[in-house]
Amino acid sequence: MKKFTFFTQKLQGLSFIAIFLLVISGIVFSCKPDPEPEPTPKDEPEIEYPIDVPFEVYKIDPCKWFVCPDPGSGIYQCDRKLLIINSYEEMEEYYQCTGGNTVPDIDFSRYTLLLARDIHPTGLRDYYPESFTCLASDSYSLNVRLRPTETGVFSYWCVSIITDKLSRDVNVELVVQ
Image 1 (cartoon, one colour):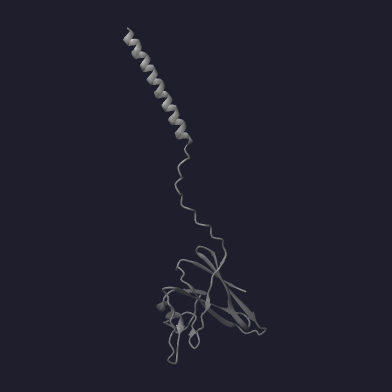
Image 2 (tube, rainbow, N blue to C red):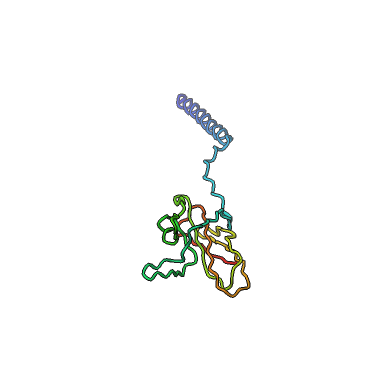
């Protein structure tokens, strides 16, 4: 029986050591700094609208824009006041050169040509594109400034700008002031 008691005492001593080691290891592991958190992808900064978009006035001399082609009648009429032109073929539909002049080159892989035109009820001293603004990811505004005269004659006006490539799906609002 002494042997059994001796064995029981040794077993209790070993279990005490095992519990002691578990407690110590728990304290040691709990004192270690937390592992570095995994980097999370940073959110893209929110774009603040409106944004002024750079553009260049496109001079069409000595050629001219015609309003809209109607091949059957030879009469040029169109309800659209703003055209988004993204190819040379589209440009030829609205641009006419005479006397051996040719349509100027535009790199349509990088740029878009915007053509705005309308009729004003009086004469015009001057007209020009004042600004081109991005209002949202797919919405723009082209602002054209008119300087009328006091004459009672209707005046046709037309401005064209080149800007960075725009999708065909964007909405461009024409604002005339």
